[in-house]
Amino acid sequence: MKALLIDPSNKSVTEIEIEKGIQAIYDAIGNKCSTFSCPITLENEDTFYADDEGLFHDISGGIMMKDWQYPIVGKIVVIGSNDEGESVDVKTKAEDLAKLIFWQSKEQCEKWAEQFN
Image (cartoon, rainbow, N blue to C red):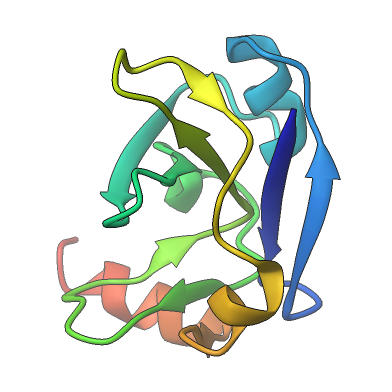
């Protein structure tokens, strides 16, 4: 299945092939991900999958988008979904998504997290 991988460490959005299933999402996110959340769903039903414990792992950076209140830390996988909620090929193009992203450094993400400690 086609998905997008957002990688803050090299500020890239690339199309990848991913198997269906939770383990494939964990593997694509990397960084010892063992639980994820879906903080964003776009209007076309493409969904962001991010490490739910990203701030507890080695932070490489994160992303923000317009009107967001906080960054999403680490790699993010974007997968499409259909009317039944099943995973399908992503609809958003990598170059279109890249234009919407504000890259956040490791330091910016850590500074944001410090306000909650």
